[in-house]
Length: 147
Image (cartoon, rainbow, N blue to C red; front, side, top):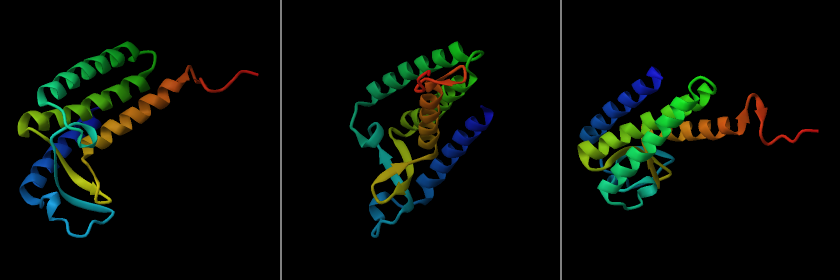
């Protein structure tokens, strides 16, 4: 888990550097597969507009629920704990942005449309791991039917 926390701290440092050194997304003339530029996300995922106090409240509630899931599964299913903590740590990076800047700092522009940061990658990786691990109980895939 310390490695994930270090990755998110690195993300915060990259965001600070990006804010001070990269052009705004609007400066991109010819979109490519991957471009490094600043995109200020004032809403939630996919730039869906939302009031900041509500975003913060929802983030705290979901974070608390994920911490409960992590604690509940710490001994019996550590992969669930790991995945839940990945989501919490990644979300904490984006929550810090919202509190410090008033928006989430995205700096990787994909295909001229989607804007992400390393914290987003950590969150999505955690969600995929959590969903995958939730399908498996005691080494048996829940989707397999007994013969």
